[in-house]
Image 1 (cartoon, helix red, strand yellow):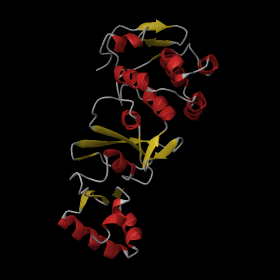
Image 2 (cartoon, rainbow, N blue to C red; image 1 turned 180 degrees about the horizontal axis):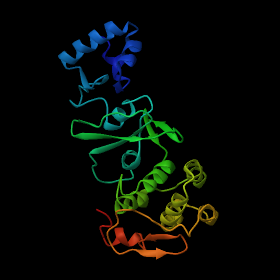
Image 3 (cartoon, rainbow, N blue to C red; image 1 turned 120 degrees about the horizontal axis):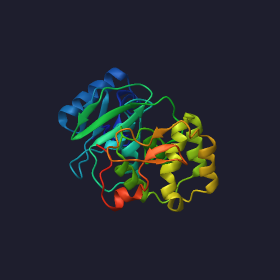
Image 4 (cartoon, rainbow, N blue to C red; image 1 turned 45 degrees about the vertical axis):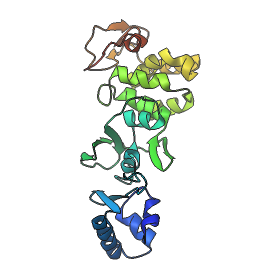
Length: 254
């Protein structure tokens, strides 16, 4: 089938990608794509976003992560969806969380809801198996930064339990980039429960505290509904033992 193999290599692709693959004009590429869509070898996901049909399994060549990567030139898989991409979550998640420097309208496709989150930087965005995704270290920092908006505390802890290792220098790089007092404390406190598994040094936690003002009292997650303790060493209202949330199956947030 003419052009099919050329297009299938992209998994998800735009008209610009198709034009280059076909080595033709944009007008002709658009006509060819319309014809392939009618014949069923290509599926239009949304305006200017396509994928080829996988004739082996009857589905799409593109996964939800491939699609997320091509929504905008700067889009990448983030937060909960990044943990899922890395295999650090063991349940099916039908929201695909996508960061992008240019906004796009949330949309649904084949049971997945693609959600746009603004991001003004591309720091620690890696390309793995053709998917643009935040590094695991950025994913950790970003998820704690938006805890209660992109996932709840219990979900985050379940993901962190599965992460085998983290580079503390890369975590520090993201913290310095955001440079938010409360975030240093939230990250330090949360990761203190996983310091052995993630192989984080005491120097890392000293760094988080040195960058913090514990007199500026905050809360780990704004929508936590259970009774919280004041953790004076971090200047945070939070659960005294975060691990108890997953060990006992307590629901921390709405």
